Length: 169
Image (cartoon, rainbow, N blue to C red; front, top):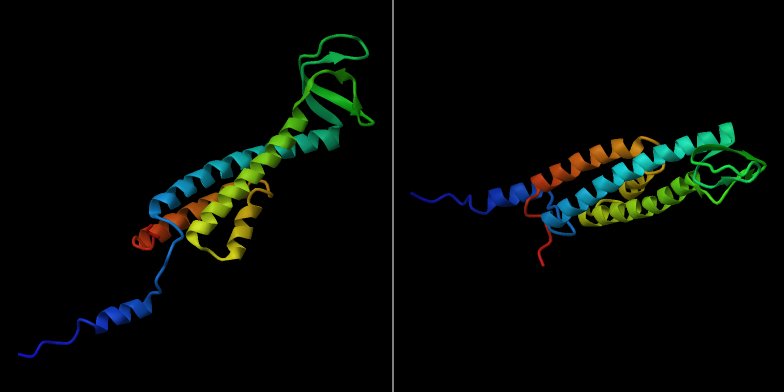
């Protein structure tokens, strides 16, 4: 005939057992940041692999990839292909050095990758060490693909486990 006083006690015990998770944005913002991060992780990883190939060509075979230009010795036009670099100079003038373009594009793509990392890290409110580990994914060949897979699964799991943790404006 007396009502149990269970209305307050179980709620307090479940709150104490699981700490309250808060994100730096809404789940929609987190999913958008995750998509942006995923695209940049794959693009940066692919450019890093091209960079490794370019460095092997440059330092192991003393060659660079050139499109267009003319051979300064014979006067013939150069289409597309590898050109030997002797003492820092190549025999092709006026062409586009695609090896240098790979270096430049990868460098700027890595900067945008770091922005994507920072955006996701900020929204998820992870510790600083996690940002450093994610950023290293764009430095070691093939690591960006592995890190992206783990980060993607972790973000989806955390957002699904904490549906009301998003910051509302």
